[in-house]
Amino acid sequence: MQILIHALCTKGGSLREAIANDSRLGRYELEILREKQPGRAPGWMKIRSAGETPGVLNIEWHPQTSVLSARVVTRGSKASPIVGDFVNYLLRQHSRRVRTIITAKAQ
Image (cartoon, rainbow, N blue to C red; front, side):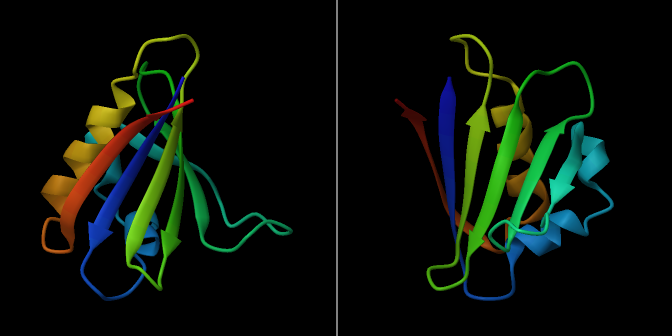
């Protein structure tokens, strides 16, 4: 199953970079798996659960529109709790920037 998360934000620096440099990420059971691998599009990052929660988030920042996009990939047909962990993190740590969060199931 794939779930899309779009966070519409206020103008400013990269929210993806702010997440990558945030030492509080571990408090929300999230950890960076990979970031900005050479040969790939700039500005992407992979986050996974630091605990037992299945799933991986592929995150990109779109500076022209100030939108943080995350694609959640899980095995099986159930939505992963990692979606809730990530949304909870965004609302608690970046609430000044985040204006709207939209989620959708991808086909």
